[in-house]
Length: 58
Image (cartoon, rainbow, N blue to C red; front, top):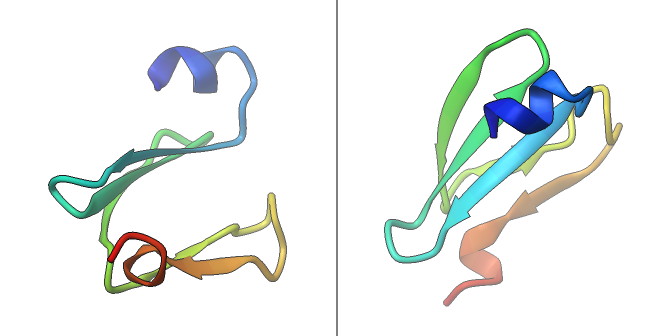
C-alpha cells in the first residue's frame, strides 16, 4: 500500500474480510484500522462517501 501512496494515490483501503478490518492509508502517511462495524469515509478524496463493510460482508 505504501507503494500506491508513493506513486500519488491519495487514499487506499486494504480490506481483510477474514479479520473484518480495513487499513486506511492516507497520503500524509497516516494509517488507521477501521473495524467493519464502523463506516469507512472517503475523506476529501471521495467527499460524502461512507460505507459500513459489515453491511456488505455478512
